[in-house]
Length: 190
Image (cartoon, rainbow, N blue to C red):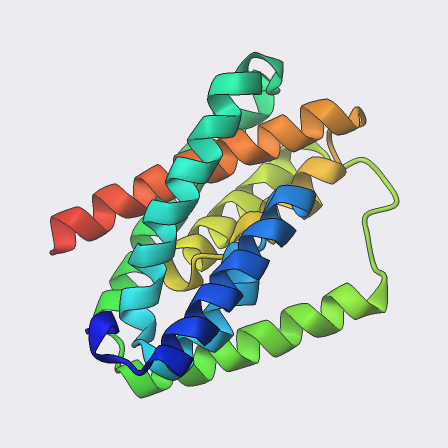
């Protein structure tokens, strides 16, 4: 499918993915938020999410192997079961929804996240551990549905972990596990 595209389209795809991974390297998440809108021009959304999941998984695991021991295990234990449950819901929606509806939902999602990012809103206080429930579930849904739950986890974790290095590796570890969950779910779904 991709190889049938003209070189200009392949160049746009390559540029979008490259920029997305540069941003991911700086922020620790965001590949889907940057790459998906461009890729959606050429590839169905239902194919983009599994593709980016595979790529994100390899990128995250290289970071986990290097720094994984610095991750906050307490936060991971709280979030992972909720993330898996949310991912099941998101994968079911992705696999059962019409492609044109998914494309519209992706557009609304990217615009809403852009507005949130531009607003400068961020948690000014520490979240209670029970806040993991909505953040974990919603992050899992968005991870499976759009490949972009990382920013939801980042909001939660930044309201729980003060040390930047621990925050970054906990986020990376969670994204690695999230992408592994997506890869397994999509492999099972065919």
